[in-house]
Length: 350
Image (cartoon, rainbow, N blue to C red; front, top):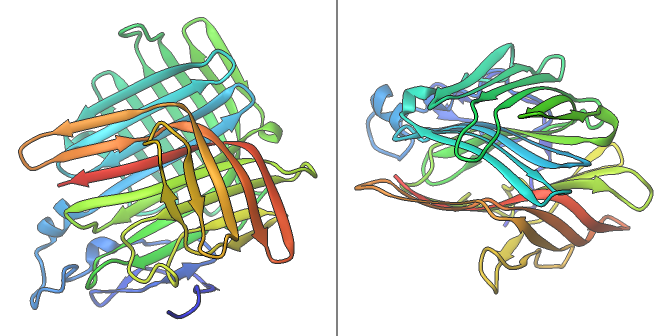
């Protein structure tokens, strides 16, 4: 296969005259309009817009790490159901505060892109909002939930800023026919407060990291992917972050999302495979064919979701954990020592 694609300038929109543009882009796309693909599945006629909307999976999430632990905030719309989640793993106390609500599709509101927009979820007492300003590289999260089932009341006000790594990873990647996915992933710093009952946690930009993921895709009816993202400081004290994925993208040697933010730059990595000899709760082995990537992810706090309905089902594992091993970046061998992060094993039908 052709070598991995390099970065190109972002287009104004991802779909033109009903056909998707493919590539790896060096900045935010103002209009990630996958909904405008005329016939995602190669049918000889245009698919009605309402049918396309029903099949377009969408989510926005922030993963945030800081000295006390790690959290994920996500708004997800599968069109059959939606999910709002604020999940914090307190590493110092080995406790997970897991606020997660399944709701109808209309409970999740996701915007077209990241320029002066808002994503929100409101259902079952959980309120989440994400305010996006990609022009300035600034984002804001607000979260509220009442006391429930052994969990304290939650409030959070968090600010996220680019600057440490101003280069995001923005992709438009193919599945079959004109179906495909868009993702904007960006490494940020975080600040703000999280209040859990009487306890208040303070986040400071200099000792935190965050990953943004804005995502849309016409996934196959049976959707599957493996993913790990993690960050920490290398032996020289430099912030370093990883995004590693194995999914259903066509020609993954050319089209993939595997990158390392390091030394103020974004480095492309080769295709990787995930192996879990002891299952999702054991070590995850993440390697590339030439061993440029040779890492293990050790789950610390499990997060499982299994759902079986008539036509919808999911088998999901999303643990927080630690990433360790080695990665070769050109002539440099980068040692990765217990970087804090999150993994996902997702199988979704519907």
